[in-house]
Image (cartoon, rainbow, N blue to C red; front, side):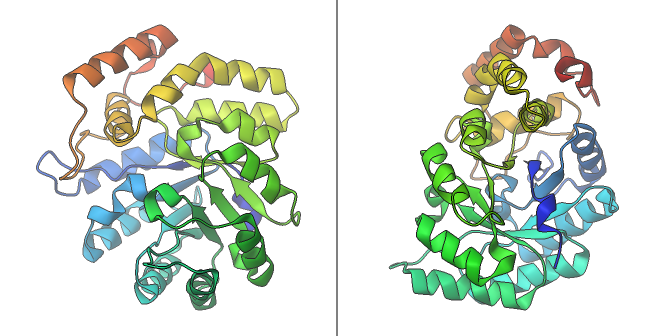
Length: 312
């Protein structure tokens, strides 16, 4: 089995790049991977909700998977989203990810008309028995429609060692984080939701975050300071950029905003969101410009520029 211990720190969920006509922009993938790696993150996650996985055909998924892993070249671990309403398809996706060289997979519960712990258990154990990779259990009922209790998550982790990493996104996240980390010490809890509650999650004992954000190095700086014992320093970095974290994580706008930031930073060529998604409206773009100006980040948008001096 892969190294579950590596699933700590900051894992950046990267967007899937598209051309203006909505086709895959695979030419942007090497630059995207190189850019995100340079921000100091501990890993990359692809084909998640904000990777627009639900808008990709199977052949397109394979193309993105292969392009990212080739660009990563083993220099940074890659977690692959394999969620599907069908257990068989989730297994197929997980096997494909393992065969391509992924470090781990991320699996949300399947949407069920009447979800039960027994049905969820069968789904997760079936995927776990089909591959030897760590499975990041995505607890995000806002997208899956399926709540999972602390008791269920800890029982699943006890039964299947592969399922001991929980990407916790059931709001409010800090209280549930505290209840999960009070369980067996081998359970790893990661936050998400754009890093909006990162400080509070760390205070409750989380092991980092797996999320999208247009300036991943900011989250890296927060987590590294916190784990080094510099809580005041972590809070100072977080507070300085909390306005952008809040702004970027707006419901229904987080993906187009994030893609626009990545484009402006030279990480992808286009900010296209695949239909029926839409780009950020002019008012939102103006608001983003204002936030970047107020945080001083507008001066750091040169192509390929990362910000070690800013957060170091």
